[in-house]
Image (cartoon, rainbow, N blue to C red; front, side, top):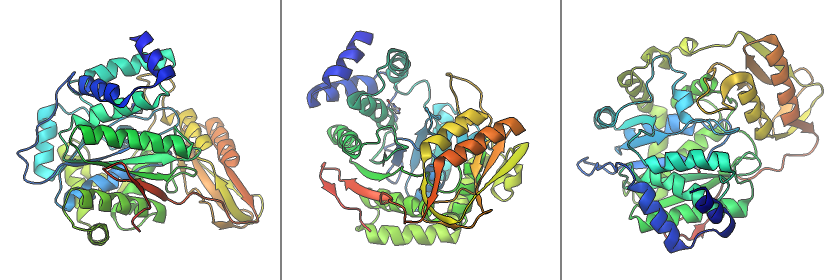
Length: 407
Ligand code: URA
C-alpha cells in the first residue's frame, strides 16, 4: 500500500481510477441510508484553517431552515483546528456517538455533530495513518478521495465544500486549491451527490479568536447575531449555498435572506443548546460562556506604535495554538481546550500605540510569553491598506464550472 500511495503522489490518478478508488474507500464500511427523513440531508466540509468555527454556527442554522445536517467532523490537523476538539471543550459533550445514537439526535434535532465512527470508511483511517508516516499526505487525489469517502458515507443529498486559499491553507496556491475543489466536486457528481465548493480566504484567521474554547465562545456570539462580520458573512454564504443547492429555495438571494432572518431570530442558538444537551454536554454553556474551560494566564499583547493592520498571518497563530497545548504534535495526544488567542485585530483595523493586538490564553506565564511572540510575528502594522483576498473568491458549481460568488 505504501508503494501504491507513493505511485499516486508521483503520477496522480486518472478520473476513472480515482472514481474506482473512492468507490472502494466508501464501501470499505457503512454508508448511512437516511432516505426515510422527510427533508434533504446536507453537510459542509472545510479543508481546514485557523479560527474556522463556521460549522458550530452553520449546522444548527441550516437545520433550523428545515434541512437535516448529519455532520461528522475531524480533529485539528497540523496548524489547523478541528470541529471535534472545539465541541469537546463543552463540558460533557460526546463526540463518539455510536451510529444509532447519532441518528437519534439527528432525527430529533435535525442536526448531530460527531466524529467519524469506526464503521465509516475504515480504509481511509488505515491509509491516512500510513500516509502520515510515508510522506504521502500532499496529493490532491489522495486528499480528495479521503475527504469525499467519509462525507459520502453520511448518506447526503447535497454536499458543500469550503476550500481554503491563502497562506494559512494546506494548499495555499489558488490554482492547486481550485484543482482540489474541482476534483472533489467531480467525485460527488459521479457518486450522484450534487457537490459545490466555495473557495474562501485563509490569508488571515477567520474571526478574532483561535483555540478551542475561545472559538466556541465566538461561535455562540455569532449564534446570538453578534460577533465578527467575516465569520457571520461566511456562515451566511455557506448557508445560502446549502439551502439553494438542496432545492429548499429557488434562488441563492432568497436563501441568504432567510438564513439571515433565522440567525438574527435566535432559534439556531436554541437548537444548538438542545443538540448539546442530547449529546451529553452542559447546555448552560450557551448562556454562560464562563462555564467553558478558562486559562490560568491571560496576557494582552499591545501595539508598539500607531498604524493600520496590514497583515495577520494565520500560520504563526495556528502553530501558536498547538505550541500552547491546544493542538497535537503526536497522534492521540490530549489537548488543553482553554488555550489560544482572542481579541485579535483584523487586517484593516486602525490601532494606536498601546492598543491590544490580541490576547494570549496560556497555562503558564512562560508559554504566554511564547504565545505573545507568535502574535507579534503574525501581525504587521504599517501605513497602507492591507492586500487581502476576497472572503469568498470563487465558486465551483456541481457541474464543475467555475463562477463568481453569488453576492
Ligand atoms: N482531511 C482528510 O480527511 N483527509 C486528507 O487527506 C486531508 C484532510
